[in-house]
Image 1: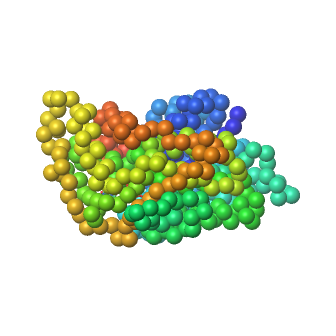
Image 2: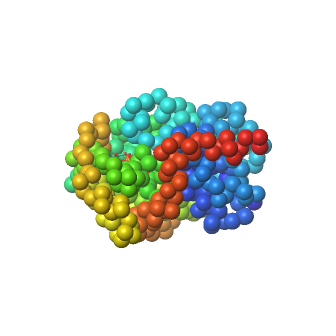
Image 3: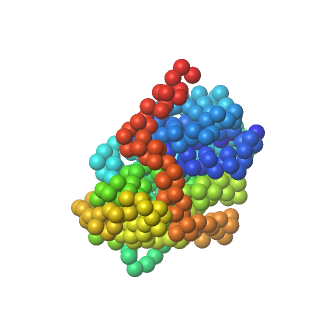
Length: 360
Ligand code: NAD
Ligand code: TYD
């Protein structure tokens, strides 16, 4: 049975990936999820899987060498899927150091421990071992409004402390591949949206604020463009890269779905109106009047757009969920999980670990 070590599995994309993997492989795989449970980690995201015999949660910081190397010595890890990171650009502008700590040093610890566990004395690696580093399109910098795409060959030009720390971690992975022939892949993905996303990011923040009749903050002129991908499509791409991709390669993953932020907000308002029942009182206040232009983000990248040609040609992956469908599914999920949103916005979710795991 193949054993996966997933880092940051209690976050947004990591938890969606774990759900996807158990749906796809059931009892054929084992997953160990290591997560420090920062503000962004929420074990409620994994309630449905925590009783499985083939799932284990370990609370640890990826910068903690001893804790990470213990996981490798106590378990025969076959695959690492490395999500754990500080992930929010605005937080990185306020407090950059923790981004360097987790994203750069944490990745160095993960690489070092995996290499120590997997490398043979002659410099080859044990059969079938693979490390996948989950990264972002933001490492490529910003595109002009009127054209161009990010390719795997686009030079790195990060602007925010977040993207600079992710770029540094990507370069470390590349250095491990070049220097030690370390068996890895890097994926650079565009903006994700979907269930379990923390409401500091644009889409869940707008859904939550609109439902509560709060202002919808638009940075700058609202015309910055992002290329949105439904999170399950990302989870699928990561699995396919490990299954079918060529080792040592980078794959760009993107939605072919470029939208200005202001367009996203209009789509959310319209979809909420369509999906709420006729007699729901919230329909009264969900309208454009909530939109509020605020001061722009410092160093705000104008446009991101991925060319996913390589992953399509080599692996056959393409985004499957159209935005109209994905946003309906996301909003439907938030309707069904009002308690989740309440716990996240009140901070109560952080008590969940104590309640569930004390004395275990
Ligand atoms: P997230 O912030 O929702 O989750 C991050 C998870 O990592 C949390 O569970 C947190 O507790 C954990 N974590 C943070 N610091 C840690 C540490 N020191 N040790 C152990 N665990 C730690 O992030 P996300 O949106 O799920 O992103 C996951 C990965 O995907 C990140 O590497 C991010 O750069 C990348 N990515 C995200 C997007 C996006 O749109 N969200 C797009 C492309 C790539
Ligand atoms: P975000 O979800 O933070 O992702 P990223 O910065 O990593 O792309 O932001 C997406 C876009 O939405 C970005 O251009 C900033 C903008 N934005 C707002 O206009 N208002 C907001 O309240 C937030 C959180 C983001």
